[in-house]
Structure formats: structure tokens, C-alpha cells
Length: 512
Image (cartoon, rainbow, N blue to C red; front, top):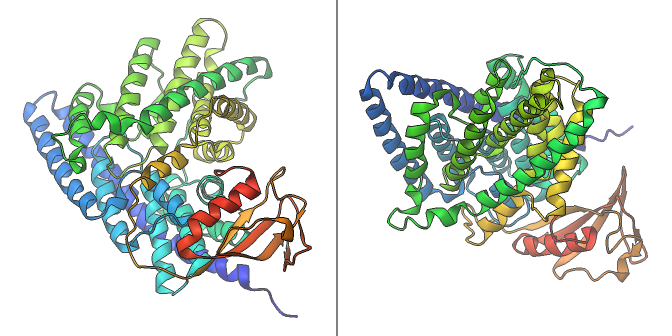
């Protein structure tokens, strides 16, 4: 009997990717946590001796200059890195993996650990993807295999950042790669599991957001979930609008070079850090504090406004840092605010305020990223409890629906579109015939049609149809079914255009 080793080999490759990416991201996470603690201590000491505030101001100024130089040398390290990876996997841009890897690591550590409202998850994804790309290039793997390595590395990076391997794999498939190809998910899952093992060896088995609340939410209180979901959806639209238009604010400061825009959020940080030292950083500290103490309504409203503005301006400056964790922390604040008000009005038992915080984190991410399945699994893994699955799903679905009805876009796709207005194609000049996999959805333009009846894009060739475990060699009379995955061969230079045209045929829309 001949063994089918294709997927097994990719699983082994995924494990290798996960081990390397797990080490890189775990060290990244360790450095951020240690340095952030130092910054918080300096802010607290500044209440007793102003020289510590002066020291922080000098440190922040050095960070502005150093990170600005890193961004100038490698523009692809700006922001979270997720839009860049999404663009790379779709063939819209290219990167030099080594240049991105070391600059993103240093720039991310300096930016995130300084206390700005930036998350480690986006940079961790980009660091993992850079590891995957590097291993692919060292192994001389090109085309679809190379993309599988990049996707696996991205999954490993997120897994090491949050200790959530299942959600990390789903996030890459649902939000970044948009493809559930067997090779992609097996490689991504094995990489995520290996990276999570490495990360757990560094940080232990305690969930990242251990909220210490396993009380089941009563059915009689589900009307609160509906209201919470609607509120989250509306706030999600606000966050999207502010984030996507944040650069308009910075353009008013024409005297500041773009690479040094970060001076503005650092000025804000000096004030926030002085008055609220325990509420700076990406936001996981805020979320964990809610497990022990929930402030009153006035403080929560002030905290929501401050964190919303601070998060938008921190990300809009272009510093290497993500929005993932800031989004979760904003969702937690909204959930706490809703829970406290509902409890005061007699609509909710105060014991369930923490539950509202947990559900709001998932709902807020679900509507902003438009990735509800990822949101549900992510919070489940990060909180470490299966008791909340049904309420998480209800809040996520409602908040997602609100944003979808009001034409909100997935935040990372929207950021990629902005990035492509001024594309930066760096790295090696890759030119080869590539295979791309595109799923066919129910109700698409090509469902139940013969191959010969479809107007295929130029410079593309349908070479295979994946139908479950079957691999069909298509001919003119082959009928395409919903659920199929089309394997199309295309020149790498035309890949972006071809993908968009075939996605329009297979999905009925240019963006999935």
C-alpha cells in the first residue's frame, strides 16, 4: 500500500515553523511585558519625584527617533502587519522577510512596551509570517507552498501571543487567507499547536485573560445580550470610522515628518500615564483588573473616551503595533459600562457584570474584524472556559449583523485597501507560475455551471477542482458545485487581478 505523505509532510513543516515562530514571539512577548512593568513603575515614581517623568520623556523621544528610522528603512513594519500579510497571501504586495523580522521585533518591543495603546498580536502574526517565509525561502519552496508556510507562521505567531491555537488557526483561515484548503489548515494548526507549546513553556498554563467567572448566564437575561450586541455594533462602526480616518488628523501636523507622527501619542501617554498608570498599554491589564474590581459609571465613561482616542491615535501614528488587544479592551470597557448601568436599573444581576465584559470582548472584535467564529473561539480560549459559548455566539452574531447592515467593512481588509493606495513592494523579485485556491460559495455566479460556460480571466488556467477529498481534473463539461475549491494556475505578476476576478465569480463579490 502506497502512503499518502503530502499532508503529513506539511504537518511536520508546520511543527518546525511553530517551534521557530514560538521562540521568536515568546521572547518578543517577554520583552514587552518586562519593559512595560518598568514604564509603569517610572510613572508611579513620577508622582513623588518629577525627575522620573523627565527620564520617561527622554526615553520616549529616543523611541520616536529610533522607531522612525526603522520605519523609514522598512515601511512594511508599520501598523499591526496583518493587512500586509493579507496582501502578501493574495499577491498584492511582497516583503523582505529578514528586513521585516528584525525591525518589527525591535520596533514592536519599543513601541508596545512604552505604554501606548497598541497590541502585540498583529506584530506577532507578522513576525510568525516572516519566519514562515524565511523557512520557505531557505527550503527553496515557492508558489502555493510558500504561501502555506507564511499562513502557518502567521497562525503560530498569534497562537504564541495569546495561547489560543484553535482561534489562531481559524483567524488565519477566516480573516487573513480566506481559504480552508486542507494543506493550509493542517499546516496552520500544527504550527499553532507547536508555537503554543513553546509559549506555555515560557508563561505557564494560566489563560491569558483568566476572568475567574464560570457562572452560566441565565436564559431569562438574554434580552441583555441583544441590547449589548446592538450597542457594540454601533461602537464598532465608530471605531472603524475613526481608525480608517486617523491619518487625516495627523496630516494637519504638516511640520512633523510622517515617520515621527508618534510624537503625538507619546505626548498623550505622558498625561495618561501620570493620572492612570494602571490603564496604559495594550489593554490586557485593564481586562484582568475588571475581574477583581469594576469602577463606577463616570470613571468607565471617561476610561472609554480616553482609551478610544488613545487607541486610534496610537495606531494611526504608524508605529509597529496592533489593534487586536486594544479592541478587546475597549469591548471589555463597553461591557462593564453596560453591565453596571443595567445592574443599577434592575435589568441585570450584578453577579453577571463580568459575564457582560467577556461577551462584549467577543462581540466588539466580531463586528470590527467581521470574523465572528474567530471572536467566539478566541475569547473561549483566552478566558479558559466553555461556559460562555452560547452567549458569546449571540452577542457576536448581533454585533456583526449591525455592522453588516450598516455597510461596515472588515477592518483588516479596509486597512489593506488603504495600504495598496501607496503599495510598497520590497524584497526579492519573485516571478513564477503560482497556484491559487478559491472556494465556491452557495449562490455564486458559477455554481452549477459547466467550465466551458464561464468567462475565465486571461492568463489563468483552471487545473483542478477539490471536492471534499476528491481531486477532479476539469474539462469543458465539468459542472462546478458550491463547496468546491478551484485550483487556478496564474502568473505571479497577475495574481492579484486574477484572484479578484475569480472571487467575483465564485463569491458574487470582490471581497469575501
